[in-house]
Amino acid sequence: MSLTFSPCVLIPCYNHGAMMSRVLTRLQPFNLPCIVVDDGSDAATQQELDRLAVDTAGLTLIRLAENAGKGAAVIRGLEAAAEAGVSPARPGRAHRPTAT
Figure (cartoon, rainbow, N blue to C red):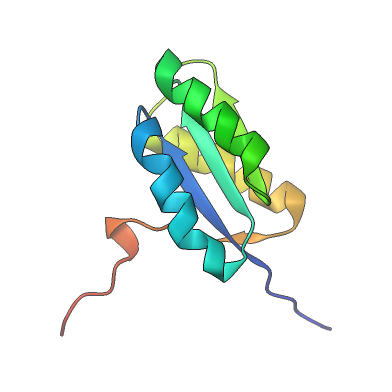
């Protein structure tokens, strides 16, 4: 049996449109698919995410109709990753290495 690891980046987003362009730019050198889950953000963030979805190769934008919380956004992103056959690695405090 052959196992294949196909990583992607999963980013839940709630009203963080202004910083998303910088985040995606920093991720570009890794050439990984990226799933952004808009968790019911405001109109300005929705507009920015729409623009980035058109301009950014490998970006999948999922939009939740209303804010359902970070956990719900992550679960929806995990579902999308499974459907796409990729394994998410979500950046964030929960995954930062700690000094020992």
